[in-house]
Length: 397
Image (cartoon, rainbow, N blue to C red; front, side, top):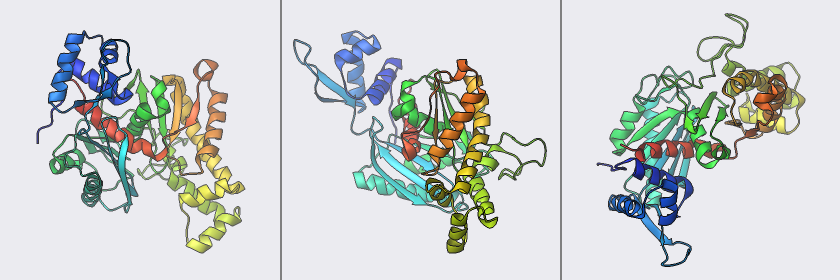
């Protein structure tokens, strides 16, 4: 199946404007794009003929004959896929990236790429059936891994054993018959925040993704910054220890990495130590009941006011903050958005991160810098993945 897109830069700008701001009148579009009425009409007619734009009812009267609103055509549908170490999350959106249907399913952390992609295709089939949808305009995928954006493959991902070099993009594109884009989850979530979250109001911001895998998405000058080889924002394995062998062992095989101190596995490890040492009767009781702990158990103990759980979460947050101080001073963002934490952990981590960053940074960098939790929560991944696909489909040739 051949998918058409904009033929020139004006059409691409028009589509992105309708995607980001919703239905607009011809007059509003002409003013925003700086196009004459005749040129706008010609470009709109071409997009309508391709099935990318359609009318959406009458516009508000500005005197004279009433104009009609234009919108991204109803047949334009994107899919956003967020693959994690323990879950696949799939959503279908319209052309404005509003989520129309969504399904999530747990997966084993060592299920492997072939089986995980097969599950992903099954879920996509189910949400497409819900909407009676036969065609997808594009699919975006976020992975908790370093990703070669050019090749659409994960590169040596500690959180996804066995996925190195697996052709996620090409396998899905062959099965679905539409463009597929793949990026790391922090970048994808940053795009979600840029489209529908707090980041929408800022041209320069950092999205700090915590949880099982840690990363940082950077939007600079209104554009996602990937770096020369798609490695920008890869903070998970920055070493915090004094030297070789210092600090806890990380999944990457090294020791003292940020993720080894602050990831979900690290929180569980420290919580088990607190339970075994008798510092937390609540956590010890949970171990006795369940035979172990999860990050959800740590979150529940933290929100319930357990001193040991709160102390270990604050300790992890301080390690994150030490790295964030360097990022804030180097990049000078307009806002820092934090997401990916287990429900209940975020507020405690946020308070500690703010305390350290504001105390250790010069006023010029942080005097008016908000540090906030994501208001999109777990929707950031699927919305951002759909945005990733739409950026490609709505790009000028």
